[in-house]
Length: 195
Image 1 (cartoon, rainbow, N blue to C red):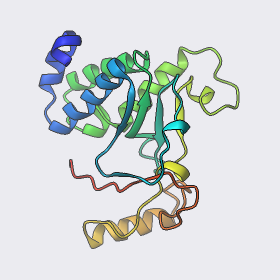
Image 2 (image 1 turned 180 degrees about the horizontal axis):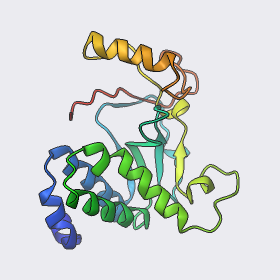
Image 3 (image 1 turned 60 degrees about the vertical axis):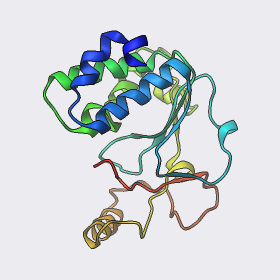
């Protein structure tokens, strides 16, 4: 698809050193070309939430981390042709040329945060209180409803201890406990299988 519809990006795409980086980039091109909904394979849908997603602007889920990133690319929706995605491609190209091999920075959530910031700066009405206006028309989906912190799925005792520590010192947003299913639309299990 990139070779056919976005040939100017093919060299950058082919040069990305990790498969997850190419997978991240491909998501953005699919959403630009076709629109729709993207979910990570470890995202569990609890209820049909299609009608709760905006159909006129992209939506990304709020990160449960206060410090690492504002959004995550584990759940994204978009109408076709939205101008956010070319900003993301430009950032990927720029960051790939810098030599960084960090997927989160080059193609993942930190890159998307910067793309949203740049896109928002081009919008003039960003001072109203509606959720999409605060991000220049990009909807940020509350982690309380869309992505609570999971417990008991860690790969090791170290991960469990880290998560307990991070939660106790306020590194995580108050997204709620995944074991309390009220108002919860889905669960991102965060298995980081790509890492």
